Amino acid sequence: MSDTITKFTYQSFQQGKSLFALAHKTLSNRLMDIVSPLETKSKPIPNEVLLELQERLNHLSEVDWEDAQRGIYPKEVLFDNSWEDFFRYYPAILIDMPQMWERAKNKKYQEFAPEVDIKGYPNYYAQNFHHQADGYLSDASANLYDLQVEILFGGSADPMRRRVLAPLKNSLEVFSDVLPKQIRVLDVACGTGRTLKSIRSTLPEASLFGVDLSPAYLRKTNEVLSQIPGELPQLLQANAEELPYLDNYFHAVTSVFLFHELPAPVRQSVIEESFRVTKPGGTFIICDSIQMSDSPQMQVIMENFSETFHEPYYRNYMTDDLMERLHKAGFESVDTQVHLMSKYLIARKPV
Ligand SMILES: C[S@@+](CC[C@H](N)C(=O)[O-])C[C@H]1O[C@@H](n2cnc3c(N)ncnc32)[C@H](O)[C@@H]1O
Image (tube, rainbow, N blue to C red):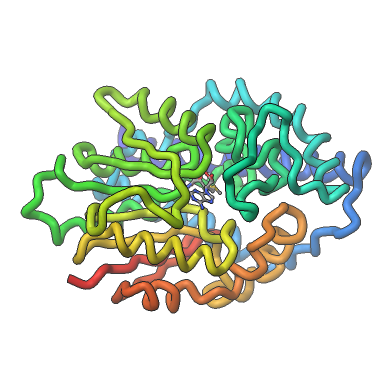
């Protein structure tokens, strides 16, 4: 396929996902208002904010395309969405919706199926984040998670995750004397493995590691990564506050969409643990929600998110100084970027 056709196909694919997500959200919000209306309503989003969102979305697709074009990852990665999963799990999302509305309306934030054992998990974690059935603690939740995030971000969750790949690849240049297969990269709170899968497309030989508190999400990561020929997922179930790895072990550490779900002191502990396991000269890359400091014009969207989704630590996260936390842990030369609804902090551990 010529580049022009591939680019057009990619843009149409993204627009299709975005329209689908919009239709889903409009329909589900209308139904919720009829069946199970919430006390707190989302604030309307002003037109200029909607315009900026559209511009950011277009820019994200452009950067995603350019990174593929310059070989950060192969172009096929741009289309890496499983139709099989879509047809299999979208009906389950529809079936789960009335229960999500009930949880939201009755402010039930710790509702788990009887077979889900929450003993031993930190209190801040054992919650129905996003009003999700079983929080992060069941296979059913792990199966629906990717599609739910895709809908939330209008089909741009993976393009936002992929923005860690260029800085990751660049940061590994300082280890050019290390054999590619001896490069070790850890993804903290790897969830269902989407980031690890995209890192694999950028670093075909590196040893990839993933850690998460949820056994169910790790099982899903294992399923996703095991489909890659020759892949041996190196996954551990652990709290990111106590990473079960040696000091200075990894050439790079990434973490995507974790920090907004942690209480402030836990954010600091996870950053300090990430510092401990990163090699001198190595890099730690955070991708998480935008904040007031970089996107004050998006305040209404951030406030709506914190009101309507169950995100107990997000309001504090909105104004938290992650840069200061990284410096406090010992990182230096922290660069930042913003793409659509995510910000990126690229922090280096001094040699
Ligand atoms: C919003 S999801 C993000 C998952 C994934 N990184 C992604 O890009 O979709 C948050 C993840 O953080 C994990 N998590 C939350 N607190 C954690 C902790 N203290 N230690 C390890 N994992 C944690 C959850 O189990 C969940 O998989």
